Image (tube, rainbow, N blue to C red; front, top):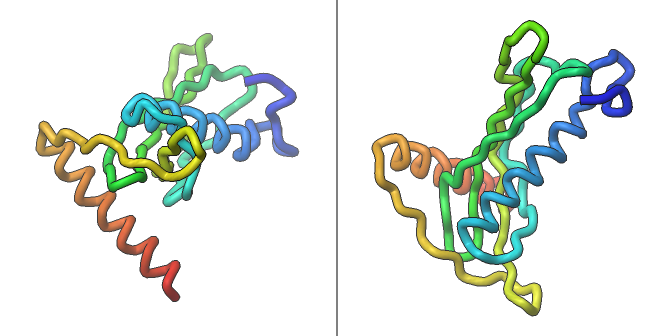
Length: 139
């Protein structure tokens, strides 16, 4: 991360990290659906620790839930101090995307294969987040 990414405290601005996470999540959603995907919601976002200027940042995403046209992706962010060889988990979040057809309308996406207990647990947790999101929208 470079000085132009810094906030007034000299740490990387949260919005920069959020943008990186959104882009990583969209790539995961597009790879799953083989379609253009756009952000529908940021379901959760946690800042565990600051990212410092000079750190190398990596985002790792995995599809955790799939509906008819929407896809949830969990994104984990790590910051590495390459000089001291330390890696810190700095952020985590759940982003929801919708797949679009050529007319930019929501389109069906393939189901998610739940192969492990971890996959099934992540899917159930994502489904709970979806239900909460829908209940908030109806309020």
